[in-house]
Length: 189
Image (cartoon, rainbow, N blue to C red):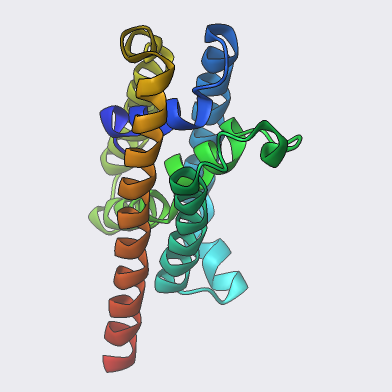
């Protein structure tokens, strides 16, 4: 979760929206991400265990989903109003899997596990405050990204969309690679 890093992707996905709709999308995406991350902080390990899903599988699935979004950004299909239908980009792909993606979910599960191993409530409070703080930062970065829109205009957003697609594809490939290496480590042990 990277508040400044989410701005180009946020602008690429919401570039055609007016300022009010973009602000609403920032709030919805942040709220959804906060809910998903909080759910996995509280019960993530149990959910994955119940479903029989290993952490590398979650990373691989998230990588594939992000790759699909990246390809839409790179090909310009994200700009086509007829391709989006009735979907809300604030929820999918922005809220999840971009903000509350596999990397953030795995990280929060591991942080909670570390807090659990340390004993006491201090670790849990630190994790909860970190989750809240990061989400406040993410919301503020997306909410006030309209300043960038005023500077770079529509043509700049189009260029930014292609760059964001490329960066998102790289993140997706990294997640898939991490998934493969995670499975190799699982099979070694």
